[in-house]
Image 1 (cartoon, helix red, strand yellow):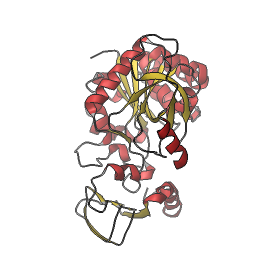
Image 2 (image 1 turned 60 degrees about the horizontal axis):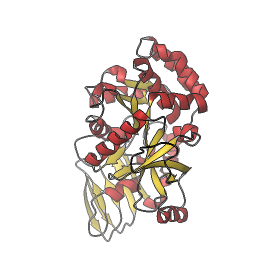
Image 3 (image 1 turned 30 degrees about the vertical axis):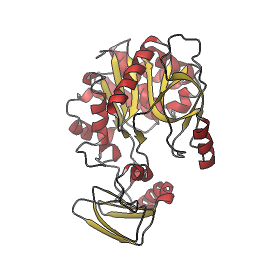
Length: 365
């Protein structure tokens, strides 16, 4: 195992699209959706253990989740949990982690991943990540993983390959320059992307060496770079928390995709296929769930279906759902809240959560 390998896991989201199963006090990354006995976060940490020394794994999260992370991953030291006092999207999140790594070493190969991805083929995942880390160790590049699309998905961003290697020699097979990034397309455009063979799903998994990402922050996000450079000497010291509490909320809220990856010229993509899914919606869970003869999915729940098809159901343990005449719906119950919603309308769940907050305060969020 390369002792210069580092992993940054982003685990600060609230998972509101999975409400009411995912709640503010315990969002989706801390839940076990499929009854494996391991939460999504625990599975993510386990996935990187063969590649990255456990002491080189950093988890960036909201301060309210610090204790649950230490509970779920007890072999992490408290200083490996980087707590954001405010939500500022992924660029400040990654900038914080980069500052922490910079305080420890000037030579690091870094992989950045979300805490809520599902990976079905872990041996292939390990091969891809190892290849990517070896590539970025030797090259001044920003590398992202692009998943070979299996369907015209409208819930993912896309990366267009230009099938060139740039000016570098000895670029591994499957790695090429990025031509364009595209946000989530409509269905017609997604079909064109898939049929062209030029586009990959944007996985949100990034790899780079420490110096390359520091240069990218200085070039494209100087406000973030300057803020963390000024506080770099405090990382890992008692002064860190006060500094982050004071400075972090003042940083711009911007994604690393928009703030850096779409602006830089040294961006490469590695095509991969290891059973990846971004568990961002009920629809993604439905597509992965075991279906009965009528396409109904019951996640860790007891359910009887009559004249019903295409539904996904999840309940608290010990409860039974008996469903008649329902099609293509989400039925989710947790902590005193029952949601029944058409799958095609799941994009409105965030608005529902906001309306519940307005009417009932924080009681059901």
